Image (cartoon, rainbow, N blue to C red):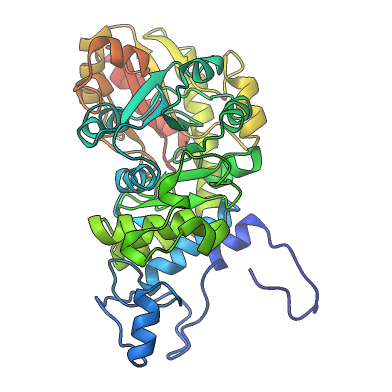
Length: 434
């Protein structure tokens, strides 16, 4: 945000203000107050020299919407601002943002370490599809941070975690894992999708890169796909010889060195100028517009999400048809202390519980709810229910599902903004109907 001109003195704006204003200003031509949807593929150059400077990365501006778009740029600045990061690049989905992060970091033969408590699609992306590119992911149990340290090899180039894990409600000890990554001279990448920057800002704890599926809480209404990669600007890419993609001349740009040329936003420039350019997973301006609009109410929505989730979790914790509840907001949760440390405003609104009927009981439950929507998404205004073992995690082995917190009896809830009593009624009647 700019300084407070009326007071003629620097002013630090609050989170709520930044969700509405960061990165945006009235359109200079029309005066439109909302950020317009710039539904344009390309942009006119001032002259030949201007065009050359843009393509040589010697000036900033718009040339083609696969790389830069005015609507998307507002969203990029806003998410970087809310995460207190240096810069961001948006992509077509959360998976696309993860791909850009690792493509910028890794070369064939490289390795990285990831928490085994991840969204099932990330486990498949890392464990199967990335292997075809020559990248190896080693999964570890995140509940003991020493597991990350013990898994580090000379080929390890990064550590990846979800600070609030999907679907199990696991909260990891972010600060301890930051220490391990820094000691090894490698970046820590945090998927902050479920927490959002309203609940947790990983850069404040020393993380280096943040990724988001903006499809979830940031957009908030189940309308728009999108992803973001955010850079802290504080990682020293030249501290060792592990990151030649950042510290050695790039042949695609006449020998330009991204870390040297762009400094504290060199990583996002590399992800945009090479990854986004060559693979093309750009965000559409219309999806960026919907996400910008959704983010304006992020703080309001998250407070209601959390209040509802707390009420539903407490109800389920006492229900005779429920074997267990994994929600870090409960006093009985083993993650309660970590949640209070890293997410003092609340433990989010996505959590799991176990149905006493096992796999068949889970199937029955999702078929008998009325108000909850049975679908594979989280972070919507509507409350959502899923049986991961038969949907998002079905491609995994039984052992992998159990390790990811998606066993046969597990039900995942994403608690929305409805009346809490109505959500409780719907779950109660469905549990009784099993």
